[in-house]
Structure formats: structure tokens, C-alpha cells
Image (cartoon, rainbow, N blue to C red):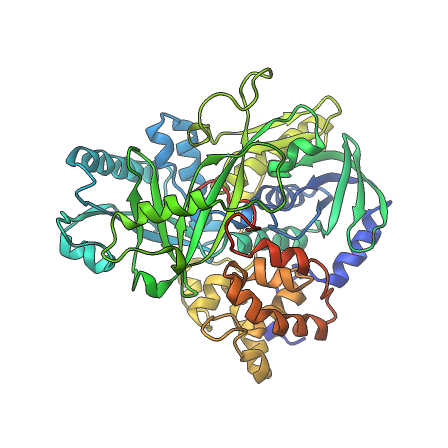
Length: 553
């Protein structure tokens, strides 16, 4: 391998490394910390512990970001919503963590996103004044969090002409203007998890996907390798349960109140050019909006709902037609030409792992999930298992830090304070450095300083420069990079998590054979997970949509 296509030292995750480290870990020497769950919080905990010099094993029954962390709104929120409900600590924490991601740890993956709130006849002048006050308060949060103005510009009022320029699809009739605000947005939430896991691996953590925790104790876990069926034990001095909505399945006494968030996927031509996203007010709500977020792959996401989910938590939640209709109705209230049901080319839904704090005799009673606090909690069971629950994608790093702090204190581990607030993830660099990276901007936004290495693969082999799907920007080189360095094992990993091809079922089906061929050529586990993967991203409401949309930020 030449230097041009060499990843960050020690950060390559591959099928061969996984097999080797599973063999070394299951039944092997005791590790300092075992993390269960490889979403953002679990991968963040693995990185936090490894960065403190602790030995770490992290397991997940599926792939990286298989659950909640891949179906967020792709936004890194500054906490404005929590100011409105007087959750000042949560709001400040969110603003601080947004700044950490945008300016230090992941500026290649998180950038400023403009949003327009159109002042239509449905938005009263009183509501507009309240929203403007909120955006100004959000800018005060930015200042309190010491995030630079160059990172997040100031909000401002827009004329009707300016509003239509930023959102041409808006209905012009009686449009009074708009309010422009800014927040953080992720290129891709699953890519953030992948970067966390690879950065942890570079620090010595063992990242073991397809390893299911069957039983947890304070001193380890009984696990099963889902690829071979073999069972064994991983011994650990401390165990952190970061399995999100499934946390209560592994530890008694943990009650999760899941909330479903649904997003629709549209082709960009249905809404035209969108230089900015949209905040579309929900009728009857003062501080909730449907978000319209253009993507860099020719798609637009429209979301999201906040509905309680009762009963058992499935791996793959459905998207009910009621959610689809609700989102289309709210979106249609501001558009010149409404979006119809047949224009929805995909959808995804998922579950926020909100902590149920209601009385034990009436679990689930209490406030609606939209009003449940996004504060996180670190709980220790009678057996000594440490569970981290609640929270939101934006604050994953702080959640991870708090969980590792408890583990270190409870088990008397030798470790200093967390360094992760200043620890760049794989591919990260200062914005001025990223601007000089010699690769297409889209690749830089996905891979940061590793973008030239991905491009080098395509430069040496013209076949790898080919797009996987006509009209979609992902190339075969990106898939090969994911198999060699990002822990992808099969076609489902590639289509549904390392790329976003799979959120549109038609696109997924069209690309599947080519992706399977590439997996087979590279010796991956081409059959593993593909059946479930096809169902996961079917995009069919009430029939197998993908799982787990995180809290909106």
C-alpha cells in the first residue's frame, strides 16, 4: 500500500482485524472497560476510555451505527429548543458540544447549515416575534459556548425576495419574508460513528461488530459471535451498557420510553434548488418545526415526528402512514406546488432512547415524548453494570465522558480526565487545512484529510472511479475504502451505513448486484446481513423501514 492510500495509523477496521481481535478478546485476558453498543455514545465511550490509556473492548450485535445513531436529523443542535422549556443546563451543554464538534473534533463532518423560517399567513406576527427572540437567544448560547462567529453566522431577518431566493419552492402569496438562522449539520451521522470507532481503534480499542452480548454482569459479558455462532465470555473490570433503546433488555430496572422519529426522502427536483434548509412551523405548536434538509446526493430529507412507541422494541421499526401524511401536510402548507404521496421515494424511522422517569406503577404515563427531557443519565445496577441512557446525538461525547468517569471511579481504574473535547477524529483538521486538501469537496466532507487516499484508489483503477449508481455520487472506490478501512463486512453495511444509497429502495435494488460483486471480489462476507439490510431500508411505510431516528440533534 502506498502512502497515498494509507489510512491514519492503526485506524483501519477490516474483516481480518475483527476476526483476529474477536479471537484475542473472547476468553482472553481481562480488559479494563467493556462497552456494549456501537452507536455514537458507545463508540464515544470506547474512544474516551482508550484515550485515557485504558484497555477497551466494544461490541455490537450488528454493525457500527446500526441503531439510533444512523437515523437522526443529521443536525448538531445548539440547544435552542431546550431554552424554550427552561432546560438551561441541557441547552448550554448542547451548545458547548456543538462547538467542540464544529471547531475541534470533527470540522470535516460538521458544518454550518442555514435555515429559513418562512413568514407565511399561518405564522402570526406574535409567533414570528417569539421565533426571532428564540434565534437571538440561540446566538447568545453560541457566544456563551465560545463558538466563533466565523463558525456560526448571526441570525437575521429576510425580505420576501431574499426568502424566495433561498427557498424558491415556497408559496409567494402573502409571504411577508423570513427568518434566517444557523445550526450545525452532519454530513452523515453514521460516518461520525465510523470515525469515532476508527479513532478508538487507533488508540488500541478492539471494535467487535457482529458480537452479541447475551448476558451482562459487573465483571464482563457472555457473548456470541453472530458470524460463527460461537459463544464465550469477555472479562472486564468495568462494563458500560450503551445499547440505547435496548438498554433495558440487558439490565434490570432500566425503563426506556421510546419515541419514534420519522423522515421522508424526496428527490431534490421536487423542491428545486435549496441553498438553505427550511423550518416549517407545526400548526398549534410554539417551538416545534418540520425540518427540510437538502443533502449532497440529490435527495432531501423531511422530518420529523415525535410519537411514543408502545410494546417491544423492534430492530426495524415501521413507518406508519399517519406519520407520512402528517409530514406531507405540514410541508404542503408552505409550498407553491405540494409534494404528493407518490413523490416520497423513501422513508426512515427510528427510536429515541428517552429515559422513563414516571412512577413504576404507571410506566409510560406522564408527558408526551416531545416534552420529555433530553438530559442523559448514568445509572449503576446492583451487579455493577453502568448504563448510560437518554441524551441526544449532539451530546454523545459528554455522555460517553460521564459514563467512563463513573466506571473509573467505581472500579478504581487508573486513568486521568477525559481528553476527548480536544481530540480530533480520524480525518479531522482545521477548516483552513481542509480547504487545501487536494480532493473534491464532497470527498473532503465525507473523509476529511483521508479524501486524497480515497481518490487515489480511483486514480489507479478506472473501474473504481465508476459510480455505483447513475445519478448518485458514490463511487466503487468509496466502497472499497469502506471494506478495507471502515469495518464494513457486507453489502448491507455499504448500502445502508457507509453510504446512504439504501434509503431509497429503488436505488438500493439497482445497486445491490454491483455492491455484492465488489464484496465478493474483496473477500467480504457477502451474504451476511443482506436479507435484513434489504428490509431495513425498504422505505415502505408500515412494512419494514429502517430503525432508530435519534433525537433531532
